[in-house]
Length: 290
Image 1 (tube, rainbow, N blue to C red):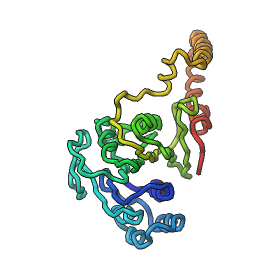
Image 2 (image 1 turned 30 degrees about the vertical axis):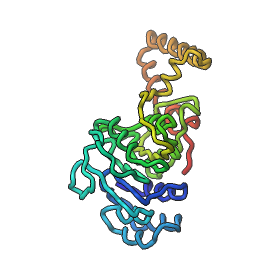
Image 3 (image 1 turned 90 degrees about the vertical axis):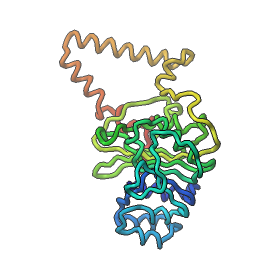
Image 4 (image 1 turned 45 degrees about the vertical axis):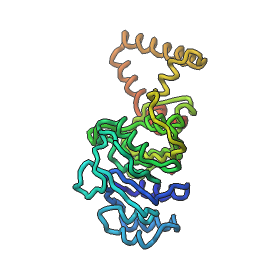
């Protein structure tokens, strides 16, 4: 589905060079944006076709909104035709033949429901033309039970990398609390850190990646930064990190032997959103932009 935040970000993508002329959506996108919110999007993006925005108001699906963004060809891929998809394909299975490549492939909340993730991602990559974009708006945190998966930013940073022919233009977390908060996510290899993220409200992730060249993806399977760093024996900082962690582990073991209940309570508080290192307040990983 297309929500207010993803609609805003799609409109911004036009200013950053994204083309919507030939568009593929994964599943037909419901439009969960009010007429007032559509007016605000139009006000902030005057280049958008107002006539299609007006047609979008009170519509169930986002077809006219995509046309307002410049979609002249709009295809919908789904595993069934219950919402009138133009391409019927189960993304758990490889696409045998690519008849068309797209300026933009948009997933507004399908990937978490597809069990065979590597095959689905390969299909997405194959459907984007060189110079085109893959854009997705997917669950990142506090969605357990919604689909098979919820995703970490690093999952997409390792997929849409130069090794696979892509550049990530934007990776944003939107926290759906009483006040919506947007955070830009830094790459672990650039920030030199990684973290678990613990927070109170659902988080969705917006990914915008440009395909720079055709590459057969996953000639080598991605590895998380933390393990890549751990296995790199030449990394000088690893020795310091290990010494610090070993010191902390010794204190924890000693406390567990003396006052186990208190030690477990302290440990649970440390690994909670009260600790900035484990929250969206971690400035080494996240930058608040809205």
